[in-house]
Image 1 (cartoon, helix red, strand yellow):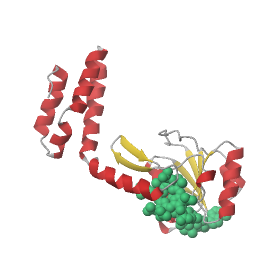
Image 2 (cartoon, protein in one colour):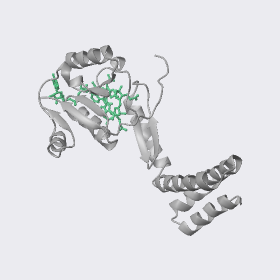
Image 3 (cartoon, helix red, strand yellow):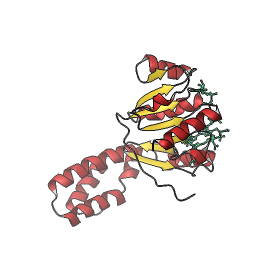
Image 4 (cartoon, protein in one colour):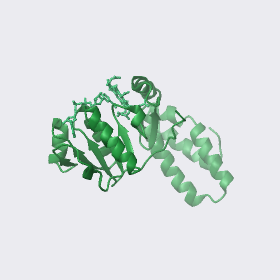
Length: 213
Ligand SMILES: C[C@@]1(CC(=O)O)C2=NC(=C\c3[nH]c(c(CCC(=O)O)c3CC(=O)O)Cc3[nH]c(c(CC(=O)O)c3CCC(=O)O)/C=C3\N/C(=C\2)[C@@H](CCC(=O)O)[C@]3(C)CC(=O)O)/[C@H]1CCC(=O)O
Ligand SMILES: NC(=O)c1ccc[n+]([C@@H]2O[C@H](COP(=O)([O-])OP(=O)(O)OC[C@H]3O[C@@H](n4cnc5c(N)ncnc54)[C@H](O)[C@@H]3O)[C@@H](O)[C@H]2O)c1
């Protein structure tokens, strides 16, 4: 297999199809909804959380077996039934339409994989083993969760705001670059961990003034 090409996709408002309504489908739906996707789910039987999402209007439920017409208007597809022949049919029909498709029981038939992800605000770190070992991807995710604690979320909020102000107020590109680098190289993360917010403010001001800290 060639290298996988990693991208982060905006799913907000995009229609995504999930075929199947078991535990695996439920996990995929959960992550789709977190990203603001519109979800259509086709399955004769569904788990309790899937039924609840449907009742709350969070997804469109077609409670029957998969039909080709379910593909109409969709952006990407998950074949997540426990029946190999159904998953294979979905994969073939998606390929014929150049649709992005993930087949939960057949890495060879996927044209994208779902990685294991940690999020800290806008920071997302995604891990994939190219389908070789989802268990290892999950283990590395757990290790990263310890290394990148909740303080990264606050740091991301600070960086977002400072970047917005600097892009507006500092014309010189070299100066901007220096400010951004000084901020990421500073001890702000450590100060956030210790909740020393006054010193955090000081570090931000120092970066603006060009005093290294
Ligand atoms: C990352 C994560 C994302 C997500 O799904 O949300 C994900 N699987 C997760 C969990 C998980 N997967 C499995 C179990 C049961 C325990 C076990 O058997 O290990 C558990 C539950 C658990 O670990 O708790 C088994 C399993 N997985 C696949 C097969 C089929 C096969 O390999 O043939 C089988 C065997 C089924 C069987 O037994 O028949 C296939 C895929 N699973 C992938 C992703 C893609 C490759 C990712 C990569 O590149 O590494 C790929 C190829 C397709 C895809 O689904 O995109 C998520 C971890 C999230 C996290 O915890 O952080
Ligand atoms: N990719 C992964 O991360 C991963 C992880 C674990 C297991 N798996 C594999 O995923 C598959 C599904 O696992 P599960 O635990 O969710 O299974 P499950 O038995 O809980 O659910 C299967 C679902 O498929 C639906 N279904 C059956 N025929 C259908 C059809 N013709 N059209 C639409 N829906 C149909 C059923 O109604 C049911 O909701 C298994 O084959 C398993 O090997 C994948």
